[in-house]
Amino acid sequence: MVLSVNDIDTISLLLSEGKIGVLPTDTIYGIHCLENRKDLIDKISCIKGREKSIPMITMICSNKDLMNFGVKLGEFEDKIISEYWPGPNTLIFDLEHNVTKSFRLPNNHFLLSVIKKSGSLVSTSANPHGMSPSTNINQAIRYFGKKVDFYVDGGELDNPPSSIYKLSNNKLVKIR
Image (cartoon, rainbow, N blue to C red; front, top):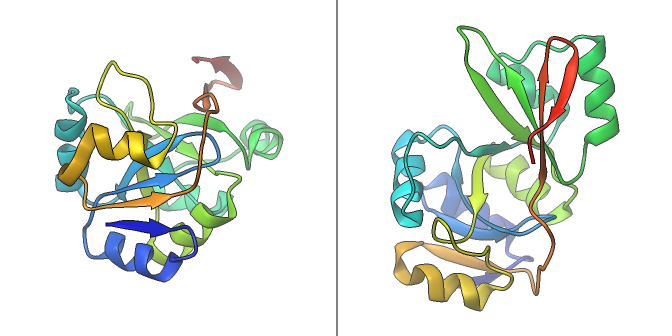
């Protein structure tokens, strides 16, 4: 099933029902599901042919969403967030018990609207592990076919993936 970026209610409903979809972001096409569904996250790893231990990005719609994940923000973190979000930047935060988690606040009205309705999403590039990310919906369909529940056509997206930064001990380190 291929949907339009105008079908926000349908897309949000499908995600809320536990479906996996390929959606456009402000950078590239990504495979998405609800962030709180470990079974679907594992399924995405299988669909992509990659290890389940490789973390995925959590897409949020507001800086305030970070509190839901136990991210503690100080002056340094607030400064970085205001400089790098919204936009094509993934920020990795240290959480309790030596756990890290990556987040993005995209600069994309469509995706933000979906997240507001469905909740935070997990995202990873729409490509089999080791292959180039999909630049259009037809390429994503060729990659995944019926392994993905639905696709959203956002036109041609030939942007680089998000830059990735790790915040730790009041330092910002570029990872990608």
